[in-house]
Image (cartoon, rainbow, N blue to C red; front, top):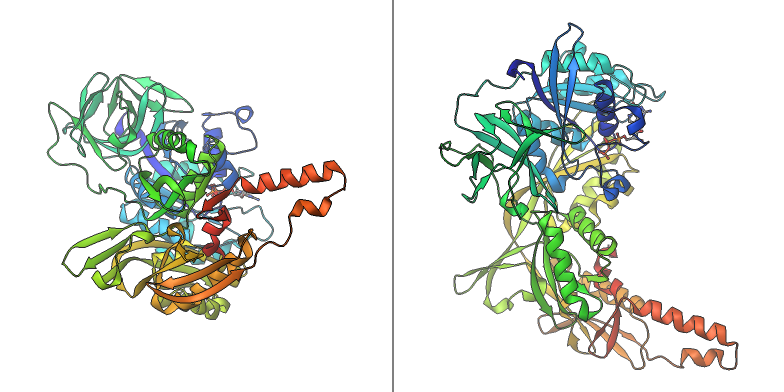
Length: 599
Ligand code: GTP
C-alpha cells in the first residue's frame, strides 16, 4: 500500500482497562474477523495460560483494512503489547514499531500506574497519543473526572479525548476515524538501504523462528539475503508477508509495512527483539536505535523431585528456551537437591509462567528454590564476582563490598493510603523520593527499592494495605552497595545449601528466627530429633527443635479396617511426592519456599 494510507498503532492500558476487548471491536469493525470466529474470550491472547491470567504476554500484530467515511482505503496495523513490567523491553520495541498509541483508561478506575508507565514509554518513542476513555456504559463511570486526570497528565484539550464502550461498541466508529486522522503515516523511506525492526519472534516447530518486524527503511523481497545486526548471521528470506488472523505470504514488504519473516532460523536467540534486519549485500551502516540485550533479573534453582528426571528437565528447558529468548539456564549441583538448573528470568511473573509450563506441558515434577536477584561482589583481591546463587556467596573475610540491583518505583493510590505505603516502603528498605498529586484525591508516590525487596510478595502487600486502591510499576536503575550477609540454614548441623538466602544485615536476626519457626511447622516429624538452625558464617543466630516421632502412625489403626490403613499409606505417598531427602531428613518442597511467606 501507499505509505500515506498506512497507520501503525498500538493500544496501551493498565491491566483490565479493556485493551483486548477494544482490539476485538476493531477487528470486528474492519471485518478482519466476524463475531462467529470470536468466542467469548479475546482473540489476541492465544495461549491458555495468558487467558487464565488475563495478561497479554507475547506481542503480536494484526493487519486490518479500513474504508474511511470519506471513502479512502487504509491499511491499519495493530501491534499488541504485553502488559506486564517483566516484559517492558518488549513493550518498548513494539511501541518503536508504531507511529501512534491509543491510551485506554477505564472510566470507573481512572489513571493507574501502568497507564503512566506505558504513556511515558510511548512519549519517549515519539508516538502520537490518542486518549480513550473506556467502559462509559457502566453506571459507576466518571468520564469527566477521568478526563481531567488525562488532561493534567498530557496537557491535551478535552475535545481530543474519545469516549467508548469497547464492550457495547459505542464510539468505536469515531475512534477509527480518529486513528486515520491523527496517527501520522510512516516516513517514506523506501529509497534507503533496508532496516527492519524486530519487535517480536516466536518459534514454530516446522518453520523455525517467525520474526515479526516493522520495515523502517528500504524494501524487503522474498528470496533476499538478510543479515541480523546483533550476530552478523546471514539468512535467506524464504517467506515474508503480513498477518491478519493468519499469515499472508507476500512478495514484497516496503518501508512503513509491518509483517513477518521466515528464514530457517533454528533458535529464537538468533532473532532478538530490538535487533535490526538489513540486506547482506547492500547493508545499512547503522542499526536502528534502542537495541538492548535483555538480562534476566530473577534467578531460581529448578530441580527434579525425582533425580533420574534430570535429563527430561534439561530437554524441557531446551524446548522452552527455543521459544523464549529471555529464558537462560545452566546446570548446577546442590548438596541438598542434587542435579538441577539455575534459571534466570525477567521477573517473578516470567518465572511463574515457566514453572507452570514445565509442570503442565512437560509433566515435570520440580522443586524450586527461593528466587533471588544477582549480586555483584567486589573481592579483597580486586576481582568482581557475579553471584546468582546465595550458596555461592564467598566468605565474608574475602569480600570488600556487595552491590545489589535497585529499581525506581511509582505507586499510584488515594491520598488516604500514603501513610500505609510509607510504612511498607520503610519495611522494604525503600528510599522515598516524592509524591505528586494527580488530582485532589489521587497521588503518585516515587520510591527507590532494592529489587530483592520487591520480588517477593510486595504487590500483594501493597494491594492489601491499600484495599486494592494502589497500582505500581518499576524500572531497573542499576547497582548499589548494601550491607548484605548470607544466612544459612542447618538441619542437624548440616548446612542445606538450597535454603541459603542473602539478606540485609539489619534483617538477618529477624529472618533467621522466623525462618526457623516456619521450617519447624513445615518439616514433618522424623524418627529422630531434628535441629533447625540459622547461621551467619559460623555464628548460630537461631534454633528450633523438632522432636522425634513417638509412634508408628500405622500403629494407630492396628486391628482397624484395612481400607483406612491403605488410605493412610496412599496419603503418605502423596505427601512424599514433593519430598527431598536432605542428609537424613525428609524436607518437603514448601520448605524451600518458606521465605516467601515470611513478613
Ligand atoms: P489485560 O489483557 O489483562 O491487560 O486486560 P485488558 O486491558 O485487555 O482488558 P480486557 O479487554 O480483558 O477487559 C477487562 C474486563 O473489562 C473484561 O471483563 C471486559 O469484559 C471488561 N470490559 C472491557 N471493556 C468494557 C466496556 O466498555 N464496558 C464494560 N462494562 N466492560 C468492559
